[in-house]
Amino acid sequence: KNEVEQSPQNLTAQEGEFITINCSYSVGISALHWLQQHPGGGIVSLFMLSSGKKKHGRLIATINIQEKHSSLHITASHPRDSAVYICAVNMYSGGGADGLTFGKGTHLIIQP
Amino acid sequence: NAGVTQTPKFRILKIGQSMTLQCTQDMNHNYMYWYRQDPGMGLKLIYYSVGAGITDKGEVPNGYNVSRSTTEDFPLRLELAAPSQTSVYFCASSYVRPDTEAFFGQGTRLTVV
Image (cartoon, rainbow over all chains, first blue to last red; front, side, top):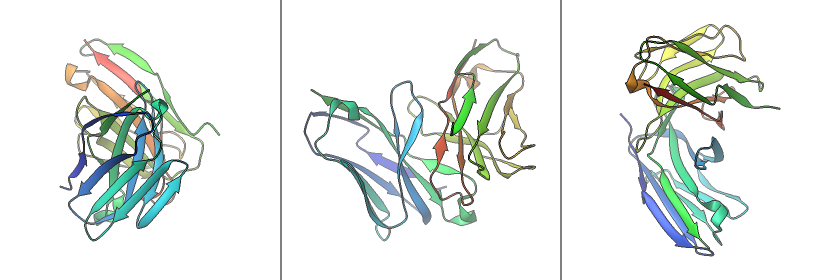
């Protein structure tokens, strides 16, 4: 069974700081997703990666397939970035039809 | 587009009752999924469907049933609710391939007492 590990589990930072959240996985994947969940809210897709790097506004996601590792970076963090960030993967076996395998999430709090 | 719509948002059930969680997507997605989210745990797959008329079990299917009579709808049925089914349930969908962007509903918070 693939395991998706995220670190840190909890992160509190000051507004403006550069934030990094890490994700490691143990087997081959066809894609990796970064998701955002606000308290009591739904889940929103931020990025889907199969290689390289993607950027959207202040968010950057990278993946290293050889090292089975991905990072999510937030530049110039803001209190509205406070949320749970979830890493999830499509396992390569079976084409990923059996859904995503999720990490436990990183609870991020940005203080003003 | 509404995306993925789940109803209800909240529900309290008594032990032994049954209910159906509704999920509808208007994006013509082939793949649909039901997940449950428990505190401190990653989301777990309950059931999934790769198209109308085709469903399959995920990691935690016991106590649940699904059907997929149309591309749009993927209801989740809870029979004989138990306290262990207290959770937040998410429906999700993706397009032709499962390793494409996933779209999630807003979630259903279910409490079984």
